[in-house]
Image (cartoon, helix red, strand yellow):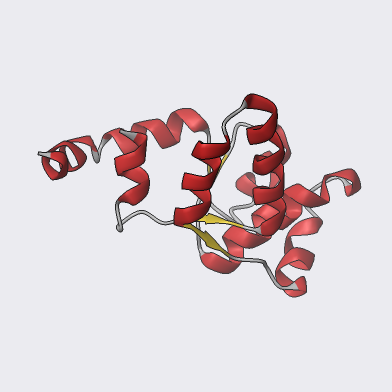
Length: 121
């Protein structure tokens, strides 16, 4: 189901080079190289400008610059950030970017489930 979801052109998966580097490391550790290659083949790469990073970094501890880059990517591309990481709570509360907890994302994606199932048949 996830594969069909990622291939759905109505949904764009956005990432930056920092996030792909993190995912690559985890994919190697978990033996999930093929899944990472699939993700990499459908993701839209958006590396945020310094202005967007500057706008976001004030909402993160200095040692969490990667999170500021992820938020800046979402701000620049008008994407929703999906994470349970508490580092994103402040920027979410300030409504700088839209941040969904993983459970929220699942609920929102389940709303599209009938469409996905009909597109598979």
